[in-house]
Image (cartoon, rainbow, N blue to C red; front, side):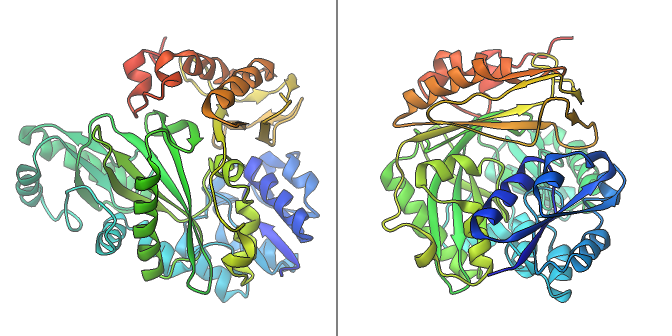
Length: 451
């Protein structure tokens, strides 16, 4: 087992990794920017190293600075969390050449999964259902027009190296294809330094379903059920739950079987998530792989009893899944997560600033993952996530009731947060009935941005 792990991240995920390390008896090293000098992850880690100024490009994304921090602190492994360098194959490679164990997939697998059209091909070969679309990167407008005519409008243009909705465009006619393709390529190039774009058939107002994967270094792969992530705004998830009310046991097992084949074939190790779209008929279609731990991993932890972050560490240390996971593996109960963001609940404008009052909810079935505290500052430089509020119950109705209670007891003053929006979502009859899709907020009028 590792003696000391450097956590190449900040905020709540850095604290989450620290907790897992403490449970395993492993010392931790926090890295921080000058803006995060007083953050809780620097206080609760065994050591802390400043790696640069506030801007992430000169701190959390600065590979030499992170590697130097690991070397001077004598860490023997690096956990990247999510975001920042977590899916950067070059960073994983530098870790390995520096004698540091990267707690995640191998560089070659990260590279494969990061190029979405290559991931599509790997999944298709293993029998995972995929949407009709291009076999690779679109070479020119003529090829795009021919393909779109073949699969039928509307279609979706997507950045090969993309994420977070950038480099994506919906095309509903031939006339709109050329300008939207140019826009998608330009946005992808600006966001990811790669302007490659591919095409898929558009599923209108789908459900967004993802499956949790774990793979060890001995060729074993396990699928720990699915999460429903359909409540989104501008392709950003707001509420997640496990399991999905739309996935039957038969569908769950069928998808899990095909994913085991696919992930064994590519030699996948550590944690990963496979994202799908579900159409109105209940068919699932692969869209991408996230080769890291997800923000919403707590809902899977609560319904499976598996500490996914500790599992990541144990897998990286060479342990087998048979020794890590409970047998038999099963899903029990229901969990819901609300992402509490520092933003106005009606205008959605960012709301950084100092927290002047802070009360965490508690009681049966409630968990809060956060690095926020009273008098703490939410800086304007990073993601707006303040806390992840998770409720667990024996069934979905109880989980919703506990989430309502927890939202009412969660006090954050000094900044605006998304708590009022979450209350409105949970109170809507369509949410209670499980009538969910990625257009939920627009369809119900809950996300009409007010000036």
